[in-house]
Length: 614
Ligand code: G6P
Image (cartoon, rainbow, N blue to C red; front, side, top):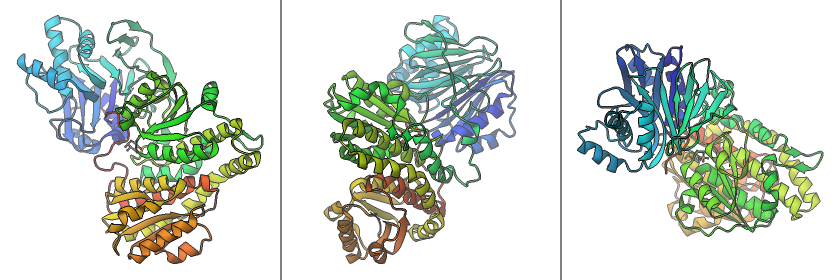
């Protein structure tokens, strides 16, 4: 959720921190702050608002420093105010700390510290950490590094944190449990980030901290990592950061979201690369080969995910049940984890997550593993917590997704899930060779068809004008296009703040139909599929109540087109593959509506890209 950046070395720290915060802003953007080691001690500059506001605020301040920490916040405890913004200072002003995560027992710790005379300036859970460390330094006469380690043994909750100390001005103390933290190794210098985005410009050599690690980074000295609980020393494990700088730029697009929508042909191709070989009839996902037998013998697939990834899971339910003929349950990870669910050893749990850091999804994975199930991950961020927590998995290779509203990650997830279902279906013999050929040939054509669909951008921009003044919208779909309706509605509400609901078309008459009048836009996915005629009837029911129809149809359709107020024609494909195409106009529609309504598309209010708290 929040973004963390830190630097220590010979370079000027402030420009690195500000640039890093700009890159991390998609993780949280209600307030931002930096702490810098300076000649006279630690200076903290922070304010409510964006990183640009912070930079403006700092423009007349002394920012000369070679070591510092920076934070961009997504509020959990306490409103987004300057007081609650990080960094937080110790009472003596010698320690500054930034934190991502939640200190669950902060009230207990706060009470103890208040009894000992500490005064709190913010409503955050984070502030207890800095006072706790200060108290341990004073009472136990230990080094700051040791004090952080000891302090964390009494913390319940999750954290990625960075601490700066005036007594050792060029050292950074870092710790991780449940929230990601990476340490980039430079030339006698260290670059720290809550993901690779603020680091990649400087180095690709990184150490991913593991849960329970506390680290000491000092320029020119070896990185020291210890275990929080037993103080055991650990050897840093150096890895290559899989990210390129140009992937983090807008590349001429007005917003990241639009860029990412237009990147989908490439993202889908990349997610198939090396895995789909049409000429040789091969579908293979290298990452799960070792567990193939488990997947083949699965009695049931349980898919756990949140948000857009959950919608991809719902598409997968249709794919797996149709192709592999094994029952599938799709679960909100947040519900699953607390339901005491029935999980058996011959269940295969598939966890889907773009970021690989979503707290509820990770917890669901841990639960499934504890109950003996095989757990497969599908995620986009290489080296993420999910990738490391699962038995095996496949990366989606969509490239970094910065826009908070997920687009290319969704289509890449659906692509990987399609490949997985196809590979299993073929091995299990639940699909005839001719059907198998037809599907893999059609799948190979999908990137070009998505490219064609993107040409509808101008038409969709026009349709968006109709939505600008609306307050509600209904999205309808049937079969494999029902999850696409859910996803279309989510996109619209996330970024334009128009209330939107996705429904299975036939279910409309059990409730939402009461809302339909001449003011209600109804977006209907009416592509050629088995239930096309039934969808036509549902459209008639909307028209009879004066609702406005915005349809997505297969190119050449006459019937639904004639009934629609606006009609979007997409290229034809197999019914099972339509979500990969039909979601694209809905993404574009949400985007243009949001732009026309003057919304901050890439940073919609209250949302965050990576939800690493429950
Ligand atoms: C947040 C994001 C969504 C995303 C969801 C799940 O709500 O704003 O775009 O779909 O988290 O994230 P994940 O990284 O697990 O796919």
